[in-house]
Image: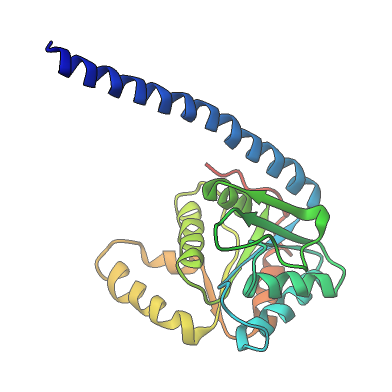
Amino acid sequence: MEASKFFKFTQQKEHFEGDSNKDLWSIFKIMGEFVDGYDKLFRVGPCISVYGSARLKPGSKYYEMAIKTAELITESGFGIITGGGPGIMEAANRGAHNKNGKSVGLGIELPFEQGVNDFVHSKYEINFKYFFVRKVMFVKYAQAFIVFPGGFGTLDELFETLTLIQTEKIKKIPIVLVGTEYWGGLVDWIKNHLILDGLINEEDLDLFYLTDDYEDAVKHVCDFYKKEKPEPNFTY
């Protein structure tokens, strides 16, 4: 091998070996996040995960509805899990706080967001570096998912949860979409393309429930648990 090529090869090898060491150390960081999350959330008890946009402001329709939803969930005996941020997350944590319920915030380290909202109980605040670890926590200790209008993050969480149930990685538990005006177009697209093209089964529509009424949303969840026992989901 020519000297210049050998030198270049050696540099590349050292570079990859350095990356390998970083990858190995990252495994321990990931393990640490799982252990911390599992330990804290196991102690919380049955909760409902609430998804939704961080951009919706106090006074907006869905923000105020999320407060009422979380209040009613808390009165029904469940805690609230959110991403701990502003918008719908803040509203849901506020609702739990209003009723002295368990208000959990799963924060994520991002360059443009600072900490969790003021309505997350300090005992139930958990911060993550890795999105995928955080998403496991949303699912593992949730007894249902109530999803308000949101952007890419909300859609990502919704479709991953649907996929886990569809593929039987977790048991079938309630997924409630709040807001027919917002979600109706997506549901129509699922019916007119995914089902008609044979990409999913028609019964997959039963994996979620669509409503405009927050009381109906909570009732749908509570009715499910009149027949089922709450327990952690065993994901992945």
